[in-house]
Length: 227
Image 1 (cartoon, one colour):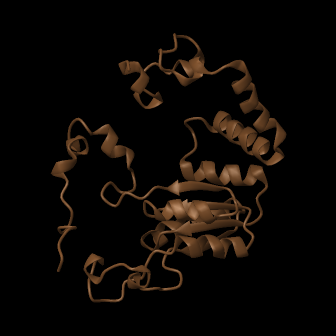
Image 2: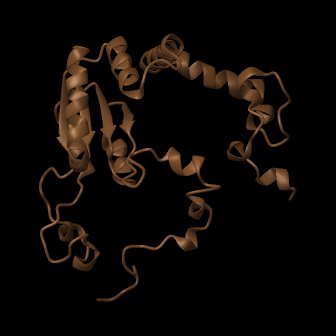
Image 3: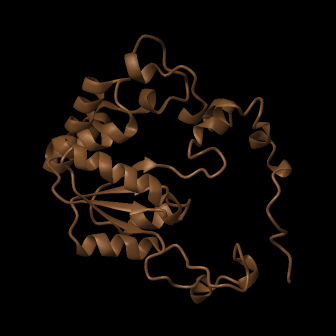
């Protein structure tokens, strides 16, 4: 097997698929696709009215506010242009302050939010099999994050669109899985980098070079400890 057979878009530095001003690398999936497969993809955007509207609205917002609007503004502009009436917010308990600020911004855009925090239900982590030793503070009540209930709560409220503010890795996965409404992110959680996970990528060759050396990252305690 040649080296190029192991390469994907994650390894690409050409990006010819955007402007068609260069040559496709040998491993490029676009270059390998036939016209029939490409046309089938286009048809999906045209056949489903909701998908078509989302795609068109997203492209128009990008065009109108390219390098002008912040993510928060872009989300609210998208919501307004889509005509969503009831917007849910699944927020991390630790980002309630940021959620409050976003609610103020949403009000300025005449968008009403219906928020639900991750600790809904106040269920102790041990109820789903988490050991006491694996809590952040063992031998105390520590509510589990409850993304499934967050999604079900917003489903019951029949929200048109849901926004994630800082749910943990994995918890966000479950929320998206169980949400009936379309979902977007406002904040991606990164406690260390003030919720800017791209910061680690920008500095992977300098300050955060441990990203390329996983063995240098040590957990708070030994995950294999028995007591």
